Image 1 (cartoon, helix red, strand yellow):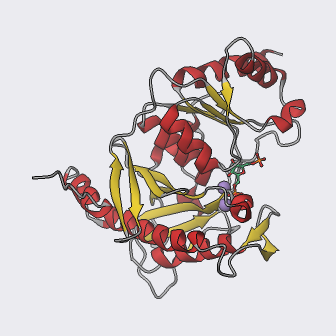
Image 2 (tube, helix red, strand yellow):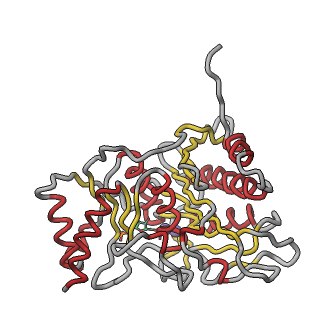
Length: 333
Ligand code: AHG
Ligand code: MN
Ligand code: MN
């Protein structure tokens, strides 16, 4: 009999749920709802050139960035996929300044979902891969509905984290703390099928670094020495797409070192801790990699505000450790 193990994400999630005897199924439903939202966003992304979904939405987000129409669409799809299920206590999105309450008419639940609905927005109009990033936490406050405090938990408290990459194919990669697993969307049947079980960052790692070198002059001496070392004696190659999900996915599959450093203009860099850095850090750690903020383990950073930024160094563990060593020299000066 030919191997026809068609493992859909729903079947995989149920299998994972069975391994957690006290699992209520709520968690499985949330991940399933995110997968449904991903299919809808994927459909729109793949028609972006054909329908009036390209270009600016004519507004700015909380970060003063031009919001793209697809940002708004993706943000709306994720909200509608999650707001009514009764599993969620509070939501938070890159596109909303404050936490998003669950409407009074819907029951509140035990989980918190933080998301960047569309990452890499500036690349939409030039057909470069973009993504969605999500992080799932357990509600920690006693009130009936969730609050900002429920969102401000360190990455080590994440129950699950992952991303969707809208690229040459649409992939959903996630972890619940039991390894990192990849699913590829088969548009002909509208299912995410298990294509990359137990993803592990390659060892030995590929010597590739990924950073926007346009900011070199603004970097700390340690950061400048690190990149000069990588491109010099260490003999690294360089790849930078400028779309976090695409850059992280390549780093996960090939190995290497992705960096978004702080600099003299933005001390904490550009990437947001709660719904970009922390979920990616969990995915990489569960795949045998590492993630640092240049000073220590990124997942242990205690957030103090919803949209706070953080320097990011993630990828093959030896390279992340090397980055920390170079940056530690800054601390001495
Ligand atoms: P977003 O589109 O959600 O604002 O995120 C964009 C981020 C991330 O995708 C990428 O790593 C980074 O912007 C690229 O920034 P630079 O253009 O400064 O390199
Ligand atoms: Mn983003
Ligand atoms: Mn975004």
